[in-house]
Image 1 (tube, rainbow, N blue to C red):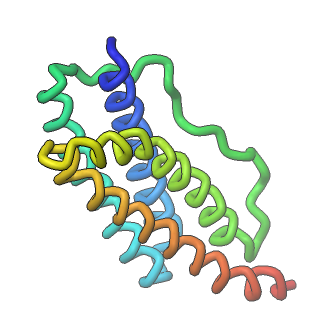
Image 2: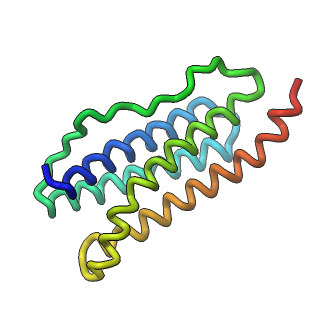
Length: 151
């Protein structure tokens, strides 16, 4: 496996983690329309990112092989009543940053290959991930005061 294949496999695994985390949070908070709707929307983006990665893998003659990567480890703390959403959002921020960081090598490669498929896809995907991270950060800011003042 060469470097580009390794990066694409790693990204596929991380995008899968992000999509799963978003769907899990949507299902844990069915009564919060805003959270549920946006998590489902962003999970769809993650699925689109995976389709793009599959196309890129074909270009690099790569077959998806997730290798030794496993699900991200989250703290095993018992959810505290009133803090569930805040805890979920903090875990989601971890996963989203992990995915965004993993895209940096392809983002840099796309800059030196302006006519490549990378240059077409990567900036949009990175922008999507930046929007997800900004949304999660905003939701943490919005939910923290309520979570911390509930007795």
